[in-house]
Structures are given as structure tokens and as C-alpha cells.
Length: 216
Ligand code: MG
Ligand code: ZN
Image (cartoon, rainbow, N blue to C red):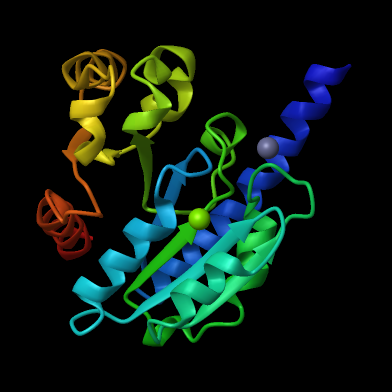
């Protein structure tokens, strides 16, 4: 039965995710699974975040993409250790991929690990990677109906980052609607609005992230 097969795959993934979780815990690493559609601004936000935090925290990055090392190369320029995973058609990262990738880092020399997932709002929501929290980006050009259309990822995320807010004057995008629908699904969700282009709101995101790392 197809449903059973799919469940077994998720179960096998979750077992490895638990191993990743305990590796991260014993090395005291805080891990963020960064989610969002292609073009939501994940890598751009990651670059801004690394610039803001790299003098205080030891950061490592796992970059997930279907093809290419374009994003890995962008991040590597900032002087942090990066492992690029190419899924070669796979639409999400799995815990075994992450387990393999973090073997390349000295986790005892790492405070904060970012895992930039493949751009996708569907199955990335259910494949846990052993992270401390999922952060989902939704960019203004994607439209304000995405919380309703892809509820699982918003229900499972600790933080929603609404990106490219500098485009709000040019788009029909009801920010209040997005926030209301996200909170209806997930009353605990934290929401930040920002534009990495203008810098507006980026400081709020950095504060929020720092608080999570400090609490861990
Ligand atoms: Mg990217
Ligand atoms: Zn997938």
C-alpha cells in the first residue's frame, strides 16, 4: 500500500533525525531548518544573518539544492564552513543527508547550524532533520494565500519570516491576513516582517534568533 510505504520512509527518516538531534545536543549546537519556496530569499537572509552574528557565534551551514553549488558558494564567501548537498531531483532534504553532511564539521566548534532546505513548501514540512526549530520564509511576491494553501509548513514552524516587504506598496499582499491565518493554525508562531534589501526588520530577526540560541 502506497500510504504505508510513505509512512515507513518518514519513520526511517525520523529515526535518523533523532540521531542528528542527539549529536547536536551533545555538542551544544542550535540548529535552524530554513524553509520556503525557491526565491523566497532564504540564502539572502542567511547571508545577512551570518554577517550580523559571525563575530559572536560560530556558524556552520548545510546548503540543500536540487542542483549546483551557487548558494553554497555565496555563503562560503562569508568565511563560514559550508557543506553543499545536491539532491539531484529530490525535493527535500532528509535526515540521512544532514547526518552525512554534519560529519564534515567539528560540531564542538559550532554554536549555530543553518540547514537551508530545498525550496519547497510541501514535503520539507514533514521531513524532520533533527533541528531545534523550523523557520519558514514567505515572500511578498508569492502571494498572501500561501498559509491557507500550504498549512502544514506554517503549523510546524516556530517562526514565520515575511520577506521582501519593500515590495508591499507594489503588490496586493495583505500582511494582516497572512499573520492572522498563521496564528490561527499555530498560536505560538513568532512572526517577523523584513526586507533584506533595505535592511528593515532584519534587526528584529537577529534579536529573535539570538534569544532562541541563548535559551537553548
Ligand atoms: Mg537558496
Ligand atoms: Zn520532497
